[in-house]
Amino acid sequence: MIRLIKTTVLGGMLFLVPIVIFIGVIGKGLQLTHQLAAPMAKVLPVQSFAGMAVVEMIALGILVLICFIAGLAARTTTARRLVQSLESNVLDKVPAYALMKAKTGSVLTPDDTKDMQPVLIRFDDSWQLGFVVEVIGDDRSIIFLPGAPDPWSGSVCAVTNDRLQPLPINIKDVVALMKRLGKGSSEAVRADLAASAPAA
Image 1 (tube, one colour):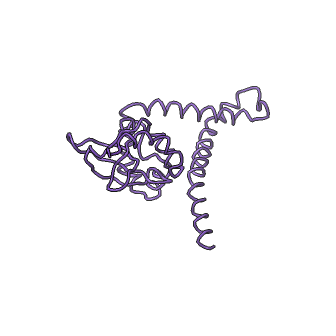
Image 2 (tube, rainbow, N blue to C red):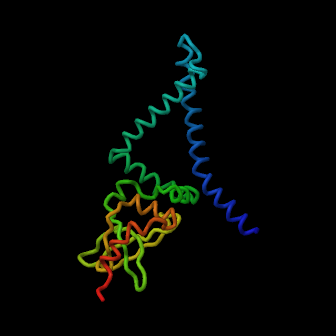
Image 3 (tube, rainbow, N blue to C red):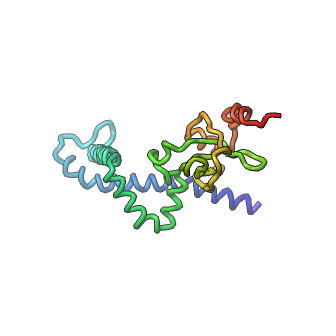
């Protein structure tokens, strides 16, 4: 009973931490933009609109604008290099940041994962879902084996290419399957397993 309570509490904490961080970041952002919005609101003839203070509306608008500009900047190579440098030299040395980055699934960016091919990997007596991360020469590949229910917590191995069976699904599909502990996998891999089964 105590073990159940402990695991449930820990699971709840891991679930809530990203939400609390998000709320905290938004709250802090609104505090900063409120300081910019206050002088602007004073020159307006109205102080509230639809039950909401004008200063709060301006602060929210400024925050959205900043996020939009940051999103545009994030598309540039220079900005990505700056963020990667900040993470590798400062933030990744903070254990809590590395944990939260892993738990929120942000270890890999969309650019990192767009060329990763979902595959079935054949082992001695089983098959496992995974991703081809890199190809080594003509006969071997580096494979990431996702875990369940946390698909970004797994292992890496090198296998020969004859053990790989490409899947007609994308990375998001595989991630969703792992989060559901594999439920629904039969539809995704049945045809590929049948096609790769050794002849009698």
